[in-house]
Length: 56
Image (cartoon, rainbow, N blue to C red; front, side, top):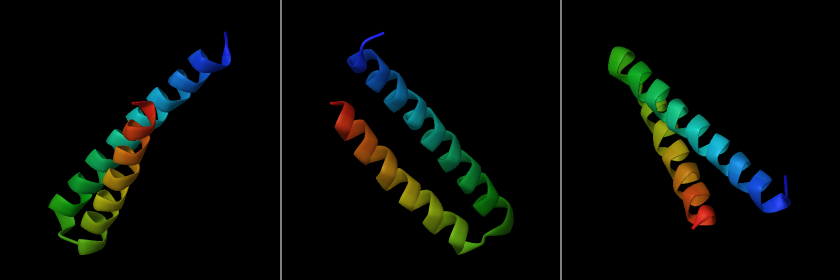
């Protein structure tokens, strides 16, 4: 496996992880209405966008 393939696999794994984190945080927010969960989800969205921009 070359470094480009490894990089793509790591970015794909990070993207999947961030998407799952966003879903979990939004679900917690929906249940509890704690704004910290919503703010954390928005921060994670920023990280996800940065990761996807890096892939492009």
